[in-house]
Length: 279
Image 1 (cartoon, rainbow, N blue to C red):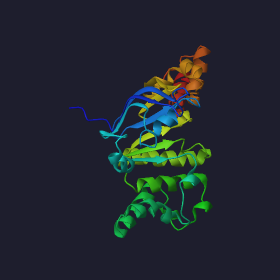
Image 2: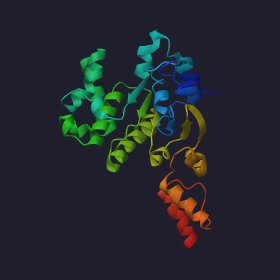
Image 3: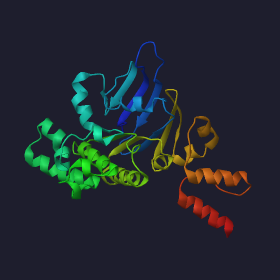
Image 4: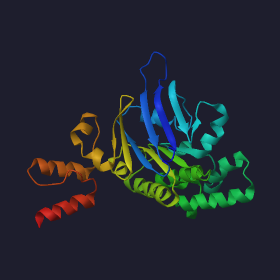
């Protein structure tokens, strides 16, 4: 018997004002437990608005969002939904509230009334999982952007969510910070089974996901594995989206008459294909 989806969006419609067009316009989507899903789309396509439905920050005007079969519109489920689905936003400074790293990770747990002994074990576990344990006594403002974002992630995973929503969580980071945060995300997903939904503009990040969902004008217009999605270069360009650099290079070489595969999405795959041609 097929396992129920972790998150299920059914014909979801949402607009910010009655006179405005729908920011999310009839979306159907399922996210399975343990899956890593990347959501892509040009600015204003509705991807961040949709993601805020997954932990009931926003509620659908029409349609239904179920989180582990709990309807987000039913107020009695709100606490449980927020426990199951944690959210990390673009600017880590907006999520950091304490003056010491470990106090920040403990903040939500203290507010929830978690017993002190359990708080201690949870924050140690969360800081280890996020790779920031060595910074636990530091002031957050002295950390790099990537380190701050990993503190924000630790604060969320200390709540032990089943699912982590990342809303452009690497957008304000330099390439090194982005890679370290993505390494943390992959670690949480693969080693701890935490479901990940990443809203991103970075195609190399999306290429690491199990599945990609592409949105345009509030609708889902394309979905599939990274190889399936990124092989449709012209369609993605028409939606004002890039593709990974390796995919772009392979396409240009194909246009020049070289026999390059259509499903190159990583530098390694591109290098192997080039080595084969040169051989």
